Image 1 (spheres, one colour):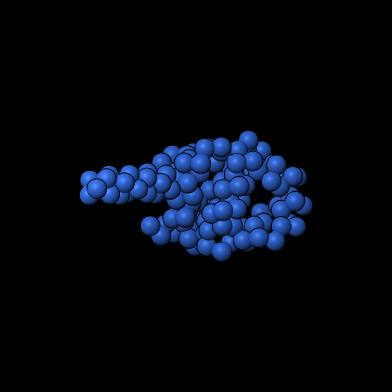
Image 2: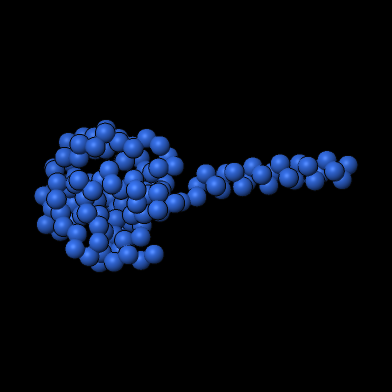
Length: 133
């Protein structure tokens, strides 16, 4: 009886560990993934808008469509949301499907682990362009 309880407890513990590792964030892997974004977006104290807006402070309460000096599409000008991990996760999978009329031509990142890692990397940058982590 005691061994059966231990075994079921071990199975539950392993399941919880596997579940928590599925949500583990790897900012270094996210930095490598950001190379896909660099052609259009910048980060850091010297970041400028390019083809796309700079992404400093994206998850620090930044409202969509508000990077100073960037000319947004009409689709973005009408958005009324602040970026969060949840809405970014949905958006980055299919930018044109989520926001028809966006200027973003990226086809989307489909892998949830990659998205989690990209978010971990982006979260390191404050609105002032300084790396916070």
